Every structure is written in C-alpha cells, then in structure tokens.
Amino acid sequence: MKRLFTFLLLATVCTGVHAHFPWMMVDKEGRVEYFFGEGMTEKTYKLPGSIAKAEVMMRVDGKLSPVKTSVVESDDFIGLRSVASVPKNADLISTTTFGVYHGAKLQYYTQHLGSEMPKKFSDCKPFAKLDLQAHAVDTDKGVEVYVLWKGKPLEGAEVKLYCDEGHEEGNETTDKSGKVFFNDKQVEDGMNAIMVGHTLSDEKGKFGDESYKSSMHYLTTTFVDPADK
Picture (tube, rainbow, N blue to C red):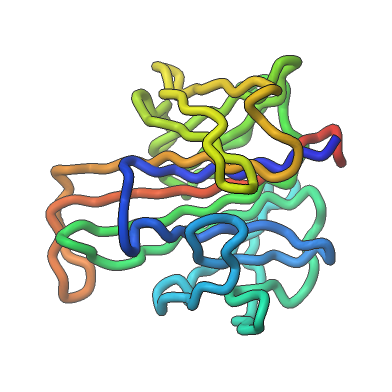
C-alpha cells in the first residue's frame, strides 16, 4: 500500500505570500521537481525570483553533492526540474531566503527523504547544514515525526496533517523530544501533508538592503513508506 507523506512546517495561519511554500518530490521518471505553491497539487504558480535561485543538494551514502536543475515552465508544471534522474535512495535538501516580508525574514527549507525509513529515531541521519528539519520513523501503528531546530528537538510546534485533497486529518503538538505521532487511520493512502513552522520574534538583522526584526522559518519534507519501495 503506497503512502507518500509530505511534512510542511508552519507556525501560524498565514495569508498572502505566507500561504505558498517550496515543495520537492521525485516524479515517475526519477527526476527532482521543486516548485512553489499552496499545496502539493499546485505546480503552476510562478516562481518568485529568490525561489528560482534555490540550489538542490543530494545525499547518497552519506555524500552530499549538488543536483543540476533547470527552470521549466509548461501548462502543468512551473518550477525547477533536475536534468537527470536521481537514485531512489537519494535524500534531497534545499534552503533559500525568500526575503523580508512585513519586517520579518522568510526562510524556507525543503527535504525529500528517499532513503529507507528507520524504525527508531536513533537511526535517523540529521542534515548538518539544515537548521529546520523533520525525520519520519515507521512504527507498527503509524508514523512518528521528529522536528529539529539547529540539531535539537523543537518543542511546542503545531503539526497539522492533511490528505492530498487538502482535508485536515490530524493536529498534534511536538513534545520535549520534538515528536508527534499520527496513526494509520489519520494517515490516508496516497499523498499526505503536514504543516508546521518556527518563528524567532527577537532575531534582528539585514537581508540585502532591508532590515528585519524577526524571522520565520518553514520546512517541507516528502518521503515514501518503505513498504512501497
């Protein structure tokens, strides 16, 4: 039974540009697809300039290397697509700064976990250069999701589960270990989406010529149930 999960980190209910996020997945031909939309089914939203410059990295057998992509604009897809296919066990990551929006810096992180899903969190392999990340653990009764911020568990993050039609199937808050759990009844067959986020209200600085007084960090992560591989 195929179950493709997507984890999107979202701190609050947002409008405007906040409702759009980068997503990354692998198509039937094994090519990476990186796009910007309100959800996994929206693949034709025009790429903002900063998102179009995103670099995709691939990790295979512990080695990290860049993935060559090109901009594609067609009737059914607008985004970055890899020039060649990637290995099925490739883990993919990308991070980019959108810019400053209403005085806050918007930072996006994107993952695709193509390697075998572990049975326990201690077997997960965190990314050294990804501040905000999520890892999924396969259990007999469902899926555990661990959210990390700069390598440490992120407590108190709201995590919402959505099916591929956009319906909310679950809503949980991470515990001290950064974990939430969704059972097999909550997780539907096919594609699922989880939304979370992390806001730093006291982070100040400049991005380009613009100053910011806070920062908002968002992550999306996709992976396939090992039973389907």
